[in-house]
Structures are given as structure tokens and as C-alpha cells.
Image (cartoon, rainbow, N blue to C red):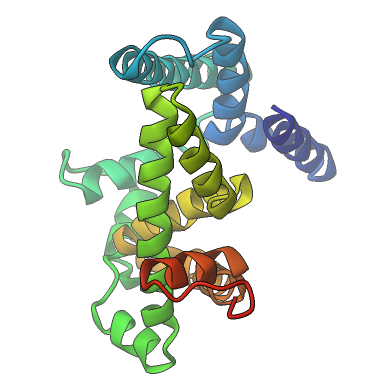
Length: 234
């Protein structure tokens, strides 16, 4: 909740510092953060029942957030009469083959190479410095742990042995690591779809890979997997 409040406060501060830039108020991020807080108030507890019940609640929560985001965004744009970012949506629609557009700005983006797909030679260039290899290794390891933790959290079992395993995995996958794992996957998808956005992914890739190399939890997990774990080795 604090994270969403900080992001909303940050966006509103940017709006003020940019001489009340109305585009900030009409951004999807502001609407998304507000909708999450509303959805959290409506669905206070998502940890009731078994695995199937929790999955249904989670899907409903996601749909609720998305619907609120679009409604709030539409409402803000209607009140403030905002159309300044419409060319972005027209560009995305045309880029992914959902229909052509005659909008000048959108067509200008479509002609620009920087807004095309990420070229494959990017991966070979990133591998030359070993960055991509380390990143993929850390990403794979963290994703496996994340899936295990998510499944165990959703299963809602009260068995003592299972709870001990959950606690162990949760130590390995701390909330800040889970947050950055989601971020790096989303940044990767953004970079793959639009080459210009790789500046977000490559910088985050460096942070994520270095986190993996410097994390005692990661090394503890690796050594346990190959049956060589001792606190001294970690």
C-alpha cells in the first residue's frame, strides 16, 4: 500500500513541478495505482479457502484492477479533455496488427527503426561481456523459486513441514527480489517489442545479474542443490 501511495505522490509532485502538466494526470500509471488501492479495499482478504478458490479470487482481483484502471483513466481524460497521448495507442494498435492508422505521429513511429522489434544480435553483444549469461542463470533460478513460493502460498496448506519449506523459500525470495523479478520480465517484454525501450531492460539487467552474484541466499540455494552446502562455503 505504501508503495502505491509513494508512486501516486511522486506522479502528483511531477505534475506540479512541470507546471501542472495534465498529461501526468491522464497517465495509465496514476489510474492503475488508484485502482489497485480501490480493489484492495473491496477485496480485503485474498487468502481464504483452498488453491482453486484463491486462484479464482486472484483472477477476479486482476480483472477488477484492469477494469477500474480503464474507467478511471477514461473519466480523468473526459473531465480534463485530454487527447495528447492518443497517438501512442494508435501506434501500438497498428504495430501489433490490429488495424492501420492515418495518424501522422503514429506512422512516424512505425517508420522509425528504434520503435521496431529488438534485433537478435543484441543478445550476442550482451553475451560477449558475460552479462546475458549471468542474467539468464539468475533469472531462471529466481523464476523457479518464485513459482514454488507462489504455488505454496496459494495452496494454503497448514502442514508444519510445508510451512517450514515456505519460510525457507520466502527467505530465498525476499519481497524486494520478487518485485524486481517481475520488473525485469516486464522490461524484457517491453524491450523485445520496442527496441528503443532496451535502455530500461539493459540497465535493470545489470542490477539483477549483480544481485544474483552478490546474494548469499542464491549461493546457499545453489550449494544445497549440488549437496555442497556449508555456511563457511556461502
